[in-house]
Each structure stands twice: as C-alpha cells, then as structure tokens.
Length: 173
Image 1 (cartoon, rainbow, N blue to C red):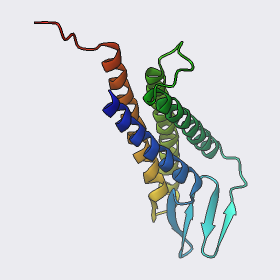
Image 2 (cartoon, one colour):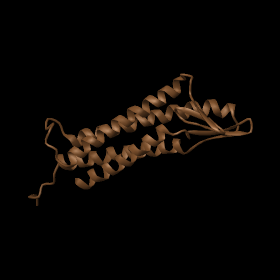
Image 3 (cartoon, one colour):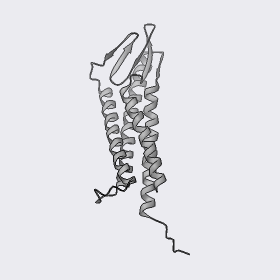
Image 4 (cartoon, helix red, strand yellow):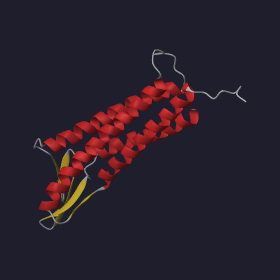
C-alpha cells in the first residue's frame, strides 16, 4: 500500500511542478512571422527582444488558463491529502484520505486534459491555417506529460485504496 502511495506522491509532485512550469512559461507555441521567430504562452507573447502581455480576452486562452489553474489546485490539494494519508494523520477520520487523494488526482488530470484539448484544437485550426511555419513548444509538451503523471497518481492512489479496503485473507486455505 505504501509503495503505491509513494509512487502516487512522486508522480503527483513531478506533475504539479510540470503544471506550474507549463502554466507560467511562454513557450506553448513558436512560429515564424515576418522572418522573425516568435513564441507565446498563456500569459504573454514574445517577439525578438521583448515580451508583451496578452491584452485581448480570447475565450480559448481564458479557458486554458482557468483549466490549468484548477488542475494545479486539485493536484496540490491531492498532494496535501495524499501526504496526510501516507503519514496516517488522524484528523478528518470521517473520510478515506487515500480515496480522496486519488479522486483529486483524477480531477486534476481531467482539468489539464481539458486545457490541453482546448488549446490544441483552437491552435491547430487557427494557426495551422494562418502561419505556415509553427510548432508546439516545450511548455505545451510539459502540459501533456503532466496529464500522464496526474493520471498515474490517481491510479496509484486508487490501487492503494483498494489494497487498504480489501486486505487479503491470510487464513484462507
């Protein structure tokens, strides 16, 4: 049980770091415009020599930002509850902390998956037609890796919950 929780905490910790870096950095997409390479993130876009804040309230950026922030919060709260389950913290005995952490990791995975799907769909349809030379960059890729890590965190915690709830019968023949 503890190895599953340890694996889940490791995946969640790395996933949360990737979520923070992915959300905060400006390399979701790179493209070439007027013979200059530019890049953009969720908060700013950069041209050679300077970066500027997105001033337009475009729905897909707002949705992606919101889903990434909700994913961060769910993952962080899942880590806190997961640590409480790991060390057998006795407060809040009315609910199973292992199960709650697993559910929060799945919720985090769902939110980051939504964010990545919204961003991917709009970017491919808009920039794919407008610019010939563009590509997704490393911040975006970190977001997809965070999807996988938060999913496996949920799997590990659900396995730990299952082992805790259904211990093997040692007296069986």
